[in-house]
Length: 366
Image 1 (cartoon, helix red, strand yellow):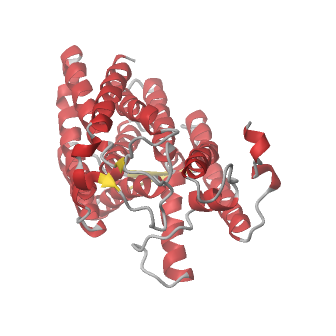
Image 2 (cartoon, rainbow, N blue to C red):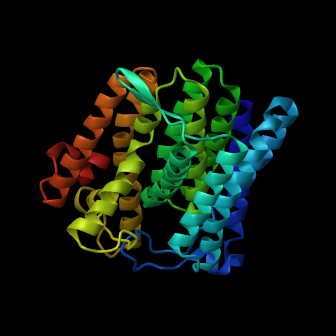
């Protein structure tokens, strides 16, 4: 817990410093209140990823001092993560880095990890055996697309205060728990460091949104999440590959479903943003206004009340993944159940037939 505590304290203090100096950020202030995915009405710094990354680096330095064995892999992992992080951070500051370039940088970071850390998908577990991916021509593209996809997926679900942060904290704590079961200290310590830094940011982001995660933060956390899940599974054969699939299925399937919806249902490019993600629909059609549609306070309250729905929804995958991390058959069943639940819930909400038990009236929050 030393790593978690150090990164948490560093992140909380550094994030507060960034908030206090918000007027100096210039272009890094989020002032677009008209976009399809916007749910705030005040100027907010969107460089929350900077204190998170710096906090992880500081905690890593202290952890290496305490446990020199970490020096073998941890600096290399943070170097690879920096490649993915820098594209998002530049976008947060300039607003001029195209999604394709950010994706390419994330792919480059994953390819670097493939070479430096041997972080690659080498097997896929099946109920009655496993498939070995011996060819680098298959393992390399599959690995970089998987890691880059998760990093991009975390950025996609970062739509409301505390949403992506809490979801990824739960996933990182699950990784730490399973790493403890298989005695993988590198994964355990690194997952706790990233979780602690994210938690330190979260106390300023939720519920009032004093700072946003930004593309840099989302790409960094998503990249670390993808790499740690990959390394845990591949370094420890007793952990089923479907553990990683179920653990990350919420952001991953959100991304896949969004691309399908945009391309085949709406006939648009999958890169064009829209306002009908699952979290956006819950914001608009389930969470009720508490003051009035045009009042900033009402919008802020509605923003904060959206995230807990998705926290609980993501736990439908995180909890069974954590409990059944060795059981391939059970993990596959839960993956199918999650996909069915997602599609059913999305279809109900988009047709204005939201389940009654999801609708909280104003008096329910008081």
